[in-house]
Length: 218
Ligand code: HEM
Image (cartoon, rainbow, N blue to C red; front, side, top):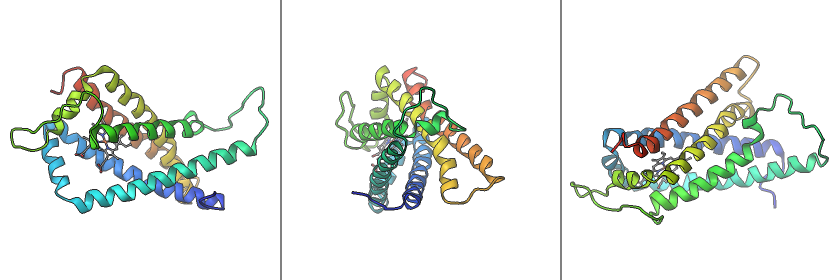
């Protein structure tokens, strides 16, 4: 079954759902940064006192992820079907590594998000320390620290954030192109925006497991 019959429609919906997820990632990074000021318990408590915001976001993001993934699989299968013969020497004209690996980095992110939700939202993965802090709030800080002290978990986050970096480096520029907002002058600027934003996400998110693992943040 096809979600959209024409390929332009599919790409536009992928661009819009992708953009929604990027907005979430920006908000999530800013919120997570409160961990460096030991303010993440207060931040999480404030957020959970706004159930309409939390659940509205969950519904919109859940739908965006599902639609984005179905369309990505459709587009990839169609592209494969359109070039059935394998050349001995593969030539990639202007196609970057990030662009060619979108389906793989996307699948890495999908697997990461399932694990991440089981870990910090549903709280059912091994080794989680689940307790209240001195002010009787749920202790998000201790929960997160209990996880990133484990080398394998910290490494898994670094690898997943590498996937996020590559996916968005290509995805952000591609979104503006698909939405018809780019021309010869603007395209390189959107490319630069993709590089800067995805680098900020990479450094920002990776800083949390790395500083915890090396005992800098405790
Ligand atoms: C070092 C990196 C990250 C840390 C420390 C982190 C931390 C957390 C924590 C503590 C929660 C639970 C919040 C709560 O319920 O109070 C959460 C939820 C979530 N995170 Fe992350 N996160 C990270 C990276 C990411 C990335 C890169 C994504 C997406 C690509 C992501 C997507 C989500 C989603 C979708 C939720 C569920 C939000 C909800 O319950 O409504 N996280 N994260």
